[in-house]
Amino acid sequence: MSSRLHHARKIPFGLGAGGVMLLLNVGTAHAAAGGGNIGGGYEIPSSNVTISQGQPQCATFHASANDPTTHVLPMTNGSFGLSTKTGGGTATFTRTSAWYAGPTGTTTSANCGTAGSVTGTLSVSYAGWSCTSGTGTYTRTNNTAYTLTGTVTCDNTSTQTVESTAVTVTFTGTQVLCGGTGQPTCNNVNAGSNISGSYTWST
Image 1: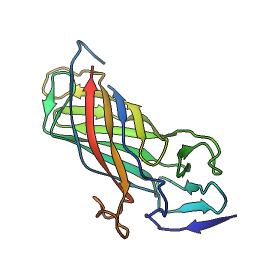
Image 2 (image 1 turned 45 degrees about the vertical axis):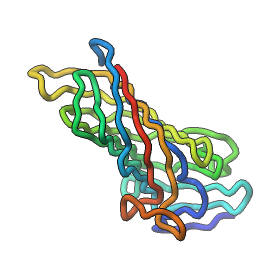
Image 3 (image 1 turned 60 degrees about the vertical axis):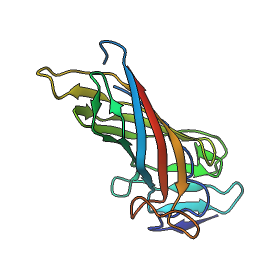
């Protein structure tokens, strides 16, 4: 038996809490590396959520094209990509179909019986680079450990040629519930959790 929550951005247990790690593979000429910070990141969960009444308590996020789950990770105080660029950017993960999570993390079904990952669309925008979207995979393994991996292809817009550059980026940090009593102010009015931390990249 389940109860249905409509337009409820705040989930009453640690479904959204975690750190964050993001991998992006973007076509390389030689090795390079760098990094930076996640500044003011956040998750906007789907507003339509079903929470099971059994144990373990489990939530189905009924994401859709009109009501997606979105993770926004600003890339600040650092660099990105071969022929290193600075100036900042944003990584965004979007899920437009149902997914499941409980206090112990993301799962493969609405009963939260088996740990699993969530796929969606990953995009990256960074000063000096034009990147195409790819597939991202999000996994949370407990209330504090969060990963997001994916592949995008980027072109250095300062050159006269069109390039396909592969860059692997790893975001790590903390995701905490926001907006409720005793919780921090949300980084976005529609957010259910805030994300902070740092990232590294290599080619």
